[in-house]
Length: 487
Image (cartoon, rainbow, N blue to C red):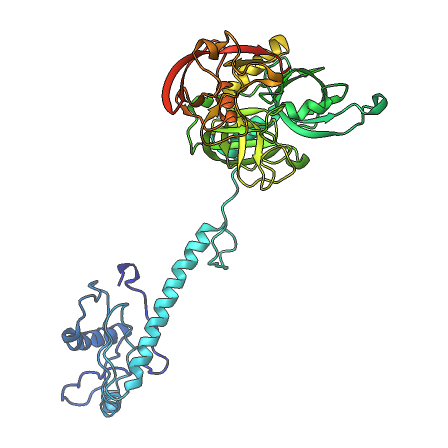
C-alpha cells in the first residue's frame, strides 16, 4: 500500500456501528463523587487499553507514526452492556483506524467483515478517483475550484507547423511552382486554331523560360497550332516550340513572355538511381493539374518503345520504371527523387491491352520515364540548334524478333545495304546476319532494346559489342556515329 495514503481516515462501516470499548473497573472505595472525566482522558484511556490488544495482530504494513490509532476488538454484547452501565462511564468516541491498519472482525457478526472490506474498497476507489480527478483538474485550465473534472484538456495547436525537408509534402511544395500544365491545340481546317489537342505536363528548365516536356504532348500543335503553359498559381502563358526529338520523345518549349523569378527544377543523376529509391511524380492526369503521386524505382534500363514497337516514328528509351501512378496527362512531367531533383521525364505506361504507349488506359503501376541524363543532352541540343542528334552504329536491325538478340537485317530501307558502307558497324567488322547480344555491359534481346541502349550514349563513344556469327560468339568495338534530325 502506498505511503501516500497514510493518515487517510476510513469511514466506519454503516452496517456495523462501532461499539465503545469497556472502561477499566473502578477501584473499591467509599462512595464519592467522581471527578469529571475530560474527552482527552477518555481518549487516552481508550488508547491505553486498546494498544495491548492490537499488538498480536499488527500487520507488517501498518503505519508506524506515533499518532496512528488501532481499534480494539469489539467486546461481546453482554460485556458491552455491563461496561456501559458500570461506574456511570460515558461511552468514549469511537476509535478510527488509520489507513492500512487491520480491523479484527466482530466474532458474532460474520457479515460485518464483508461490509468493512466493501467500505475499504470504496474508500480506495474514492482515493484513486480523487487522484485521477486531481490530474484532470491541474491539466485543465484553472476554473471554479468547487468543480472538479477527470477530463484532460487537449493541448493547444502549435502556432506554426513546418514540414521536415525530404518529406513528400515538402518536396512537392517546393517543386509544384516549377511544374506547368500544357494545353496543345492543333490548327484546324481553314486555319482554325481551335482544333483537336490534348493536355500534358512540363517543367521549368532554366530562367529564360524554357520548358521541357514530351514530344508527343506538343506534336499536334507543332505545325500551326497553339500552346499554353499554366503554372500552379493559375497564371497562363503562351508558348512556342523551340525543338523536338521524335525518337527521344523530348521537346523544348519557350514561354513567349516569361515571368520573372522562374525557379528551374534541379536535375539529378539518373545513372546513380537505384532500384527501391523513392519517387515523386507530378503532372495533370486526365487534366487534373498539380497532381502528386509517389512510388519507387521498380526497375532500371527497361527497354521501351513508346508506340506499337514496330519501328517507324516510334520513340525508344532505356527507361526508369516506377510504380508511382502515371496516367495520360502525366506525360512530360518530372519524376523526382526524395531530394526533389529530376531523375526522369514521365513518358509512357504499360496498358493492359495495347502494349507500351500513350493510350487512355489507366495506371496499373507500370510507368516509364526517360532518364534525365539523356533528356538533358537532348534538351541542350534542341535549345542550341533546334534539332536532335542521334548516335548510330550504321546498321539496320530487325525490329520484330525478340529473345535471340538484335539481328542485322539482310537489307536496309528501300533496298539499301543493311550495313552502311564505311560506317561504324562496317568498320567494326559487322555483317548482315550477325546477331548482336551485348552492348557494353547490357544484354540485348531485340532490335528495340539495342536502339534504346545506343541512344543513352553520345556520338563518338566507343562501345564493346558482343555478337554471334555462324553459331560462334565474338566481340568488337564500335565508335558511334551520328544522325541529325528525325528525317
